[in-house]
Length: 377
Image 1 (cartoon, one colour):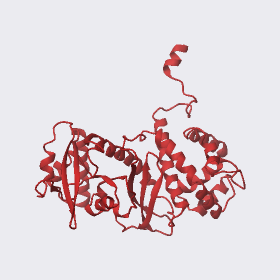
Image 2: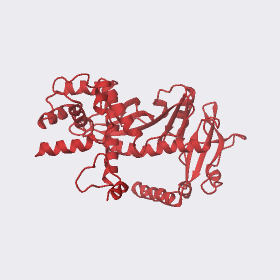
Image 3: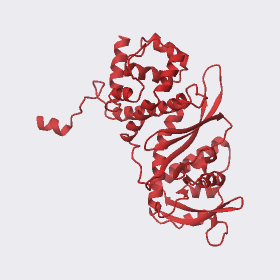
Image 4: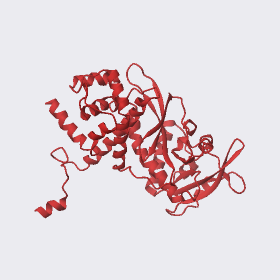
């Protein structure tokens, strides 16, 4: 009975995967031929997800696979299969991302690569009890992890960790809003779009070099029309040009932001400044891209794409807390991260299916529209 239930549930799950996903396993080299205990793409993906999605170590995942009758494989064998599956997992995640609610990014200048950077803490379970921080970059819309670094939990976030290529457009949240990190990207001929906090990034007037009163500028915003201002910032003796792009939030979004600030202040036992509550009315990003590259609306839309995927990252971060993080720079670590992304996207698709619950417990394939049913009646 247990086996039949697992088979049924696996059948439902595989319906969410991109068309041709089994053939893709062979095309990408994850499954050049059926051999040993792993004799099909279905078995391979199930065993990989035992390790990647559930947080089991390689040894634990191998033992669980044997107990469930999936495959008899060692932890070393599983590691080898994980490494060889990097391209497969990446392509699966890319195709699922394109078909998800996160898919699609605004147009960017030709030849420019969009990269989203983030970091998260990993709490390893069991006897290790070790906290690590993973710093990683993912390209959009390809969903390929092209950089990662593992540090201890004290390793701070920052653009300075990222190897930047000329033409890169790097997107970051408030944790990356520091002048030295932005200057690092510029020094390597890249550009940034980064969320600004109310403090921590001193700005200068482009005309007078005097400090900018950012809140005074933001109060000029009218309705839902975005605006931008040319500013400068200084790192060492070098002065850089940038643009501040901002838009006023809706009343509901403002109240939610203020409520979150109040709750955080209660947890930390701090006093909220009136300026902080006022700043919560706006979304403010800084970009080093020129107006010729992207206008103010396109800058905010591109940051919006980063914010949308932040929802994906939040679920990813909760999954990252379960697992034994690879600590070596090889294909297994990249495959591990891309397997996490695939798991997140599977969850997103499952949630979408759950919103249209079927009393028989699974979606019909292909789905029938109500209009078609009425016509048939």
